[in-house]
Length: 165
Image (cartoon, rainbow, N blue to C red; front, side):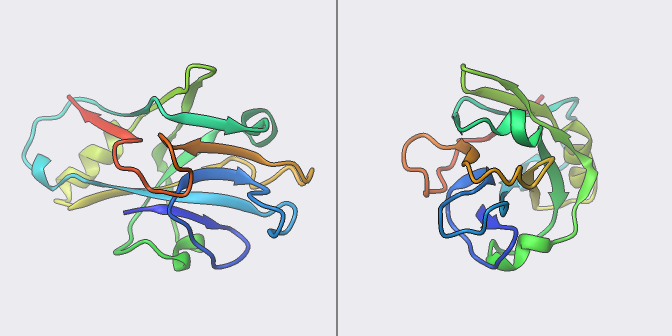
């Protein structure tokens, strides 16, 4: 359950990507954020020490990390993905900043605390908004971080992995 939505208007798509100037029809400086969801229901009652989110499927267009900063994962809660999430309240303190290793396409962040908190609350899903620190650099150039194996606009399971130990 997840996808992307522009910040400035209520659109939505299936791919998982963040950045700015997604396409020429969007206003210059309009950022794009993404939402992801992990089913954690099978882990209730588990003694978990660490939780790491990782990917080997990071693709970059432009210079998003130079121009927009780090990708922030913010803990959110939603019942279904839709364009109405574009301004949902989030808990940035219960998230992480993605540590990126380019050109290897690998990235990770420590989500131990939010996973422990969600498990303690007996939550079924652990959900996050992904966004860059800055919504845009307003230079008219595309700056994107995409999480995909093949098709950009398809939400492919397993592109982002949550490993509990």
